[in-house]
Length: 215
Image (cartoon, rainbow, N blue to C red; front, top):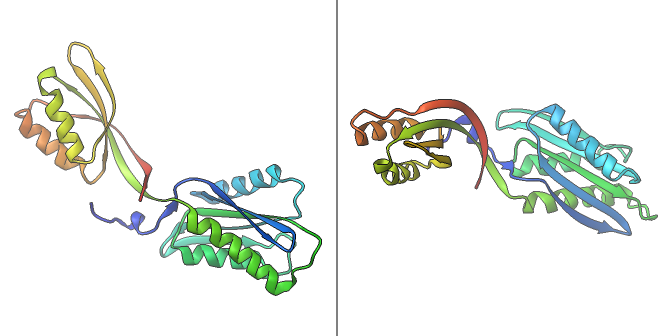
């Protein structure tokens, strides 16, 4: 499958959390996919609420990827440049896009100093970045197809060969299939379907959408 511009960067496939401790301070790093500024801010608010008694919630996010991106970071009361910037630097270096990170700190009573803070926030960010499963965005075509029973097995095989997923099959007078294809594979499926059915079968296109595909 070809690589379009949208596929050049990877995205966190799910939300994950890892914990790091330094001189009795706890650092809880949570990383999640976020596809726009509103989603990233909503994620940050949710983590703040979940750990409402924490000392700091340092956030960093990258929306978009490659050459077209929006970046943001906040030290949330930590000394300037010791928290948000190191976290953002780890995100930048990860090759991830559409990624939001919040590092929640519970102060343990011992001052870490600026060098200690930079190290703690960097290592907390690296923990989640290293372990998060990655995915890429892919445009997909969802279509419906009515077909006779005698072609069912052959069309199942044809769809699988073109990376198609069968989302549903309804059995009535004939079979109605709901299918989803990577956008770039769909025209080939259409043409092979025409050949297989001597031109009698034509899928009905429902929508084009996007999905995350694990890599």
